Image (cartoon, rainbow, N blue to C red; front, side):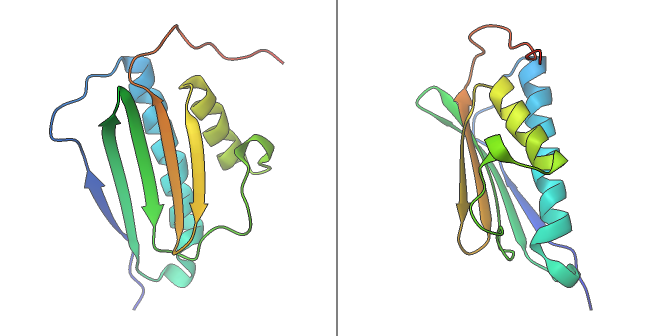
Length: 127
């Protein structure tokens, strides 16, 4: 019997206040990464685990999405991504001024580290 992945959400003990733009960008990141996990990490709709963690580290926020699925095919460089979903992830990460790490062992893990406070409004780039 096919089952959906189980998603575990871990939030910080203390509330973290975010401006609306940053909260929307984080929501977009989560939507794109979790959609990718749902489509690709668990072939044949087998069950698995997905963990989402948001934590405060030295004044930065760290958002981690990891799964126990089949992992990513090869090395992934978001700046050279060809799929629309990963291009969106890369663009949104840039708007958050995020550093992105992608790990590929025992499933996939995306780690986004970005300033808690926006340094200046982040506007889309032209061209």
